[in-house]
Image 1 (tube, rainbow, N blue to C red):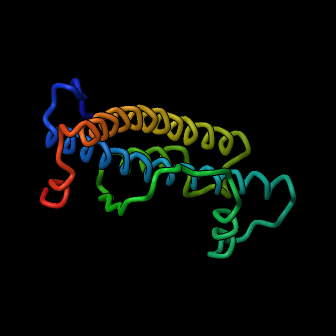
Image 2: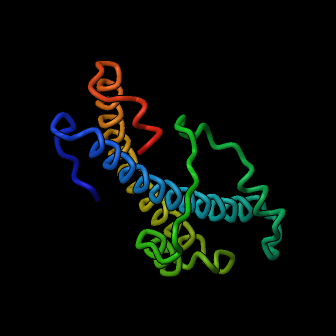
Amino acid sequence: MTVLGDPNAMTTAELRSARANLQMQEDVISLVRRMAQGRCDLARDEQRRRVDGTPASGMSVVDIANVFGQEHGGGSSRPPRETNISADHELVVELESLCERVGFGELRTLDDDALESAIAEIEKFELARSAERKSLFAKIDALTTELVKRYKDGGANVDTLLTD
C-alpha cells in the first residue's frame, strides 16, 4: 500500500500520480470486496433455502441472477472506472484460497455450522477490504482537495490536464 507524504510538499504531477496509484489500489480492493459480498450473498441464499425448505438443486444462472439482483443498499457515490484486475492479483488469490478453505464451492453439502462459519470468514475478509477502501478514500480525497486548491489558487494550470 502506498504511503502518502504531505500533499503540500508534492508537485502537481506527483499529486496526480499518487492519486492515480491510490485509485488503482482502490479499484482492486473494490472489485475483490464485491466478489466477497457476492459469495456471502450466495451462502446466505443457501441458508434461506434451508430455512424455507426449498429442495436443493444445482444453482442455475437464474438462481444466481436472483441472488445478485436483490437490493442491498446504495453503492459508492464515486463514478465507476474501468477495472482490469488480474486473476493472480494477491487479493483475488487470497479470497479464492479463503473460499476453498471454508468449502464455498460445496455450499450445499456443508452442515449448518460450517455454512455459518464460511459466511463469517468471508464477511471478515470483506470487512477488512472495506476498512482498507475507506482509508484509501481519505487519502484520495486529501490529494484531490489539494489539487482543486491549486487549480483555484492558480498554483496549477488546468490546461496541463489535457497534455499530461
